[in-house]
Structure formats: C-alpha cells, structure tokens
Amino acid sequence: MTVTALAGVVMVALIFITLAFGFPIGLSIGLGSAAGLFIIMPNQGALMVGAQKMFQSVNSFSLLAIPFFVLAGNLMNSGGIARRLVGCAKLVAHRLPGALAQTNIVANMLFGAMSGSGVAAAVAMGGILGPLEKQEGYSDEYIAVCNIASGPTGMMIPPSNIMIVYSTVAGSVSIAALFMAGYIPGILWGLGCMIVAGIMAKKRGYVSSDHYTFKFVMKTLWDGIPSLLMIVIVIGGILGGIFTATEGSAIAVLYSLVLSFIYKNVKIKDLPGIIFSSVKTTAVIEYLVCVSGIMGFIMSYTHIPALCAEAILGLTTNKYVILLIMNVILLIVGCFMDPTPAVLIFTPIFLPIVSQFGMHPVQFGLMMVMNLCVGTLTPPVGAILFAGCRTHNVKIEQIIKMLLPFFAVIFLMLMLVTYVPWLTMFVPKALGLV
Image 1 (cartoon, rainbow, N blue to C red):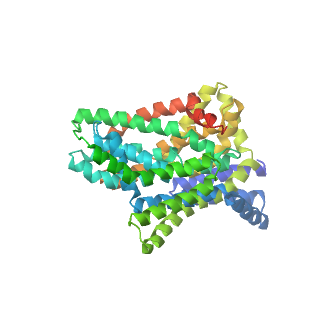
Image 2 (spheres, one colour):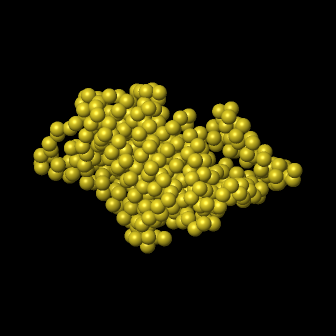
Image 3 (cartoon, rainbow, N blue to C red):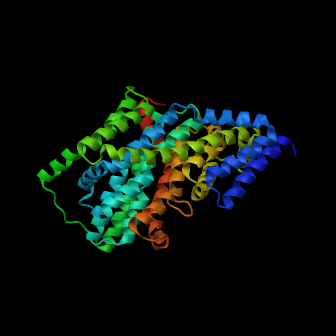
C-alpha cells in the first residue's frame, strides 16, 4: 500500500472508530485528519500545513455571517420578537384544525426566516405556545410532534447558517442564490406539516372556534410588523445588491438589538450572557470548519472523492438511481452526524458526481440540506428532536410513532426537490441569481 493510500485509510478508519467510541464529531475529524497528515508529511511539515489549512478554511468573509445570524437569533429569542411573531402566525392559522399547533408550525417558519436555527425555533416557539396548547386540551405528544417536525424549516428558509457553510465548501456558489432557492422547499416542508397536523387534529377533536375582531387583527399586525420587517430589510438588501449576506447578518443583529431595547425585553446587563451564548455556538461551528479544512486537503491529496465517484458510478450510470443512492446515504449520515460536519465531509465527494450529469450546485445544495434536516429529527443525534422533547417534557419513545406521518410527507417533499429542479431553481432564476 502506498503512503498516500495509507493516509486516506488511516484517516477514514480513525474518524469512524473514534465516533463509534462516542468521541465528539469535531475531535474525531481532528484526530483522523492529524493522523493522515503526519503519514503524508512527517515531523514539522505536518504542523505547518495543518495550521495553514485550518486558517485558510475559516479565512472567509462569508463565514462571518454565521456568528452574526446566531447572535441575531439569540437576541430575537430574548427580546420579545419571537412572541410577536407568534401573534402574526395566529392570524394565519387560527381557523385551521389544531389552530395553536398550526400557529406553532407557521411561527417556526417565520422565526427560522430570521434566525436560521431549527433548534432555536423549536425551543422558542415550543416554550411560548406549549403551555397555551395544553390549556386548550392538546396532548403533550401532539404538541411536541407538531413543533419538532416543523423545526427544521428554520434551516431551509433563509437566512440559513448551513447554506453558508455549503457555499463555502462548494466554491463559487452564490449565497444569495442558495437563500432564494430555500424558500419553496422550506414552505413546502411547513405546508406538509400543517396538512398532517390538521388531519391529526380533526381525528382528536382539536377544532378551533376563535373569531378575531378587526381591531384585534390590526393591533396584532401593528405589533408584529417591525419584527417582520427584518425579513424584508435583510433579504431585500441582499437581493437588491445594497449589501452582501455577511453585511446583512450584521444589520440583522443591529435591527434585532434596537427592537429588543424598544420592547424593553433586553437590558444592557443581559448582553454579555447573550453574546457568550452566541460565541459558544459559533465556536463549535468554526472549529468543525477548521478541522475539516485539514480533512479536505487529505481527501483531495489521496483522491478519496474520485474513488467514491468511481464506486458509485460503477454501480449504475442512471442519474435518477444515483440521486436516490445519495439521498439514502445522506439520510443515514444525518442520523449519526450534525449537518455542519456532514456538509463539510460529503460536499467534496458528491458535488463532482452530480455535476457530471448537469445538476446545478444550488439544487444539490438544497437536496443535501433537506436530507440533513431530516437527521435533526431522528435519534441518536437529532438535535431538534431532543430539544423539542426537553421543551415539552416528553420521551422520544412516546412520539416516534406520531412522527411517522410527518416523515412520510417530508420524504415526499425531498423527492420533489431531488427530481424537480424547478422547485429550487425557479426563484433564483427569476431574480437573475443563476
């Protein structure tokens, strides 16, 4: 076995062995990559190249958007903005079966359209609406599944931190195009959840009889418009070329901070805690990007992506079957790995393959993100699943069966995104972004 092949085998084997022993994903990637690098270039050469690759991987203007969007999301959660979004969501869903659960789903979509975090959306909206739903007689399990199943819409409807990571790894893929491509798939996911939630609500007798007066509607809209304007300002500014996605993330922080002070829900003394929480979240993401920079170098050096491409193309040359195989792999990977490292690992492997039969990188990016979003709802990693269960004080085994209809609808939406390019490409093309 050549030194190059040995380095690739050792890296991959060490990553999977350490993961099997329960090591954190970042540490597993770091140890495996370091071992492979020392095989390729022993002694000080490995240290120098490793440091260079780590620095290069995070030396990106686009990645600056991540800490800003994380901070904006935490400010919205603490500053009363989330509560006002719930009020606007009620206006959309108040006459539907299971009105408060439907409100939860719409609110997750709205909150995700500002924070980019599925976990934050599920925790924030679950904390606000959960007690109200219990007062209406909804079961804990029904409340939890509706909130959990719709949580990942926050990762698909822009802004989305995972799309920023994908854009960085994929190379010359426009963040604005990815953001715009996420609208239709994200809304389809949310609508699918609303249909399932409505059917469940009818079977359980959760039918709303609320009638809102014109005065109440106007007051709710008046309270919610400043919060909703953030979407218009940030996304509109990016599309209009007024500022980049990174600059838009900083504007989102400033806007949410001003609103939080106006609403008097955040004080100066609260800011250090909010900032520290945002720093911890950002540090995890940036560390993963750092160690994945070394891993990416070794993968390229050892030709791992090309070997994987040959293996997949050796099974079949039918692009529809290849895409189905990729979906299955990503769904399985998503069960065991968080979205960020999965994007960092599998984008260099799969993107060259789909490029061979003409699939646009933007469409592939949405397909990958959607697959990995499903993983946030499944054990053993499932960040949104665990966060939602803690928020609603239910056990996973209590709700898994109720989640199955949601999974069925989400899988249908995933197949549409995979095989119908129009769903992801229509909006970016209409706006001249691709």
